[in-house]
Image (tube, rainbow, N blue to C red; front, top):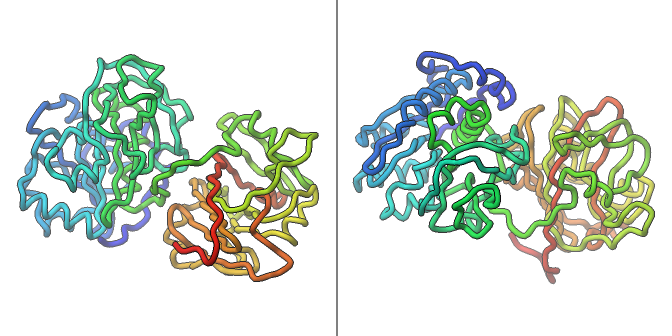
Amino acid sequence: MRAPARVMTSAAAAAVLIGCVSGPAASKGADGPRVLVFSKTAGFRHDSIPEGITALRELGTAGGFTVDATENARAFTNGNLARYDAVVFLSTTGDVLNAPQQKAFERYIKRGGGYVGVHAAADTEYDWTFYGGLAGAYFQSHPAIQPATVDVEDRAHPATSGLARAWNRTDEWYDYRSNPREHAHVLASLDEASYTGGTMGGDHPIAWCQEYRGGRAFYTGAGHTKESYAEPAFRRHLLGGIQYAVGDAQADCRPENGYRPLFDGTAESLAAWKQAGPGSFSLGDDGTLTTNGGLGMLWYAGAPSGSGPAPGFGAYSLKLDWKVAGDDNSGVFVGFPASDDPWSAVNNGYEVQIDATDAPDRTTGSVYSFQSADLEKRDRALNPPGEWNTYEIRVEGERLRVWLNGVKVNDFTNTDPARSLRDGHVGIQNHGADDQVSFRDVRIKELPARTGAPGD
């Protein structure tokens, strides 16, 4: 697949979604993203399909991508599918593709194509193993249409970045035959205590994403009702899923299990952190920490203020979401001793930098002043100012690796005898008065200690 040109950012596109745009989507040129909406049904037919097609056309007009809609399975040929950056299965049901059409779609995905599944896309092609893996899970049953609370687990992915932690809405809520969490990245799940009829035992994913056999896949279980497609939040949700599928927005869609929060957006979790040096961080109503002044650092002490810090971390995977307002400077520190002096982290630990416009060894993804990121990979993975990014910083022994939005951009090994990554604290920097950087959802998974050189 070609790499599509970046279209309107999530924040800009969302601003035009409240007022519906009439008429068909207009093409942005031969190199612009093109999306095929497929809504053939061989089982139950949702009466919301026309509203869904209209909404997707309007999203295309607002977001800068062309939308073609069909119920003709003959569109699934190698040549025709190559025209599209993503295919949306909009409440398809039953067996909708024959064997040659299935093979053409498999080749399309393996060559980097995108898939978006909406609602009954999970009630489709039960005997096609490839499709079941791509969709992530098959439909099992559903209770009556009713309000429920959706718990937004990933607030960096473009499909969910604009949502509150608790998204309250009315829809037909699917139960699935299996839980996709082990092989897909769950973006949102249902609070089964908020409605009646959920059967997944309290872990009930309802939207997820994954990289699958060379392609990108996004699925949402919402979208049964006609009203859904006039709902601004749901339209933003769909837009973000499409932006991910076409490759316009980057996101970490690897499965995420076993992490515990260090900062979950609440003042209670912030009590385990300590400010070192000047400046501060402000806590917003949306659970976001934003830098103020500096040069200082907020570090995880693991104990309430006034008591001694907990021991540092050994082997671990640290994940957090971050966003810059413009040309701003900050970083994430690892491997430093407990101290109220931010320069202790500079001199004894390592900083994974956030600043996309500095020198190669001092820019986003670099181990500051020690090793540049792979800039080509970094540039492809990086979302622009105003949009959320996700870091994974993995420390094992003296090895430090950095993933940006799911793409590994740095692999560094400490050889300085005056420093050690084997036991240290973690922190986030507030660089100065002119820098505005936001952080949220800081979480960690402690890993088993390894002997010898760890592999990928």
